[in-house]
Image (cartoon, rainbow, N blue to C red; front, side, top):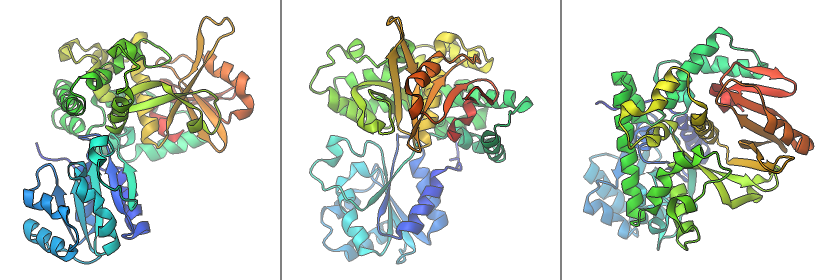
Amino acid sequence: MPEQRFKRKIYERLLAWKKERDGKTAALIEGARRVGKSTIVRQFAEKEYQSYILIDFSSASTETFNLFNDISDLDYIFLRLQLIYGVQLYERKSVIIFDEVQLQPLARQAIKHLVADGRYDYIETGSLISIKKNIKDIIIPSEETRLNMYPMDFEEFKWALGDFSTFPLLEKCFKEMIPLREAHRKLMRDFRLYMLVGGMPQSVNEYIETNNLSRVDAVKRDILNLYNEDFYKIDPTGRLSMLFDAIPAELNKNSARYKVSSVIGDSRNSKLSEILAALRESMTINMAYHVNDPNTGMAQNKDLNRYKMFLADTGLFVTQAFKDKDFTENVIYNQLLSDKLSVNLGYVYENAVAQMLRASGNELFYYTFPTESGKHNYEIDFLLSRHNKLCPLEVKSSGYKSHVSLDAFYNKFSSRISERYLVYGKDLLRQDGVSYVPFYMVQFL
C-alpha cells in the first residue's frame, strides 16, 4: 500500500522551530511508534530544505552507527555521511535527520556539538526516548526543542478525508455559541467513525483505501502487537504489558483510580515506578492524575499514586477492549455506528476526550470528593487551568444534560472557576452558566 502523506499540525510547529531557533537547537519529535513521526519529518525536509540526509537507526549500517563513537572530526563525519547516502549537504540549507535516535544514544549526545558547529539543522525522532536504557551513560543535550506528536485528532482526520472547511466554521460557532442544528447529526456520525478508526496514520490510510472496518481493526491489532513486543523487551516479566492491556477493563469499573493491585498483584513492588515511567515514556497512554487541592497549580497538587490511564488513541482502545475476540464480536463497532452505545461502554467517549485534550497540549487532571451521604463520590472527569481559573469538565456519553458533579464542584469552589463544561453528544448550548459542548468541539476548550 502506498504511503499516504497526511496533513499534520506538527508541521506548523516544525516551521516555527526552524524560523525561531535558526539552527540553535535540534528538534526532537517524541511520540508512540507508528504515530507518523518519520513520514512528517521526511515531508518537512523535502519541502523546507535544499537537501537532507535521513539516518534511520533501525536499519543503518554498522559504519553509520560507528561514526558517532568519535565526533572529534566533524568534517570527516559529514563527508562520510554524504558518501554513504549519496546526498550533497549545503551549509544552512540542509537538515540531517536522526530517525529512531533512541537506538543510537551516542548520536543524540552528539547533538550538542553538531548544533554548536552550526552548518546544518538537525531533527531527531524516536519513541521510548527517555527510558532508562536509552539514556544510560550519555549526556542529554540541552540543545533540543522537544515536540510531542500524538495520533491524528478529529480535525486532522477530517483533513485526511478531504474536508478542510468544517473546522474553521466550527471554531466560529463555538466562539459565538451558535448551535449547529441540522449539521450536528452528521458531525457526530463522523466523530463516531473517527473513534472507531482512530488517529494512527496506518489505520486512517486503511479506512480510506478499503472503507472496511474489519481491515482497519486488523491494522490496529498489528500496532497493539508491536507495542506489546516493545513492552516485553523493556519488562520481560510481562507486568508492563499487563498494565497496558488492562486499561479498558479498569476504566469499565468506573473506579476513581487505576488499581494496579487488581492487575499485577503486588502494587508495592520496587520496580513498579520504573515500569509506570516506561509506560508513560512510550506515549501509548495518557495518564490523568487526581488533584488533592483543585487550583491553578494543579501539577504541584497531583497525587502520583492516584491516577487513571487512557490509551493515547481511541481507535486502538476500541480494538484493545475486545482484542481477545473476533472483529464481529466487538460490540463497540456496531453500537457506535448506530449511535446506540450502551451506558456501560461510555468510557470509550471518556478516552476520546482524554485523547483530544492531550493532543491540544493539556495535562490531564481530575478530582473526586464525597457526596453529602458519604456513600458515593462526585467526580469531575477533567480539570483545565485557564487564566488563573479552573474549568471543570463533566463527560456524558449520552445526550443527557444532568450535571450533578459539576454543580457540586461549583458550589464548593465557585471562586476558583471560570467556565463549566458538560461534554456530550448533543448540540452546542449555553444555559444557566454551563456550556454544553459536543464531543467534536473539545479541541476549542
